[in-house]
Length: 130
Image (cartoon, rainbow, N blue to C red; front, side, top):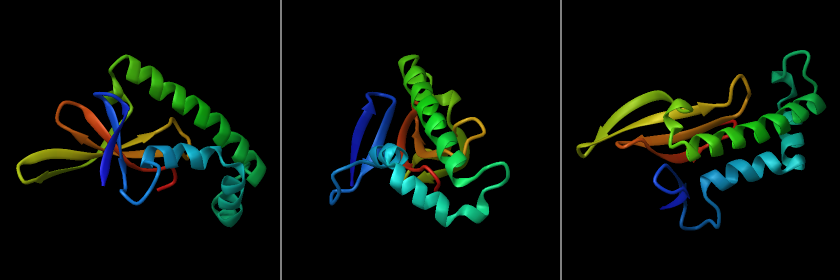
């Protein structure tokens, strides 16, 4: 497992040695792949609440994706990712303190999971519907 930079000094991502893309890249590639998204919503249609149909859910996700990425870029440029991620659980392994965090874009279905290290460094570990 490698750790690759997204926004140097702030946001990194796990990348399995056997894969060409990081968890961060998988997150955004999935959200840009309209066929995968369509199939996801079609398979999970029963979970969609009115007024959402598969096509309206796709439209909503596309807009949320664009706004989420812009917000992430803006907050990274301000060195302020801490206002995006919310605490889920703290752990202490071999004396290293870290916490599991979740960035949920507003009231969207989109979520990005990360591990927060001391010094407010985040490592993306998964998303978007994890």
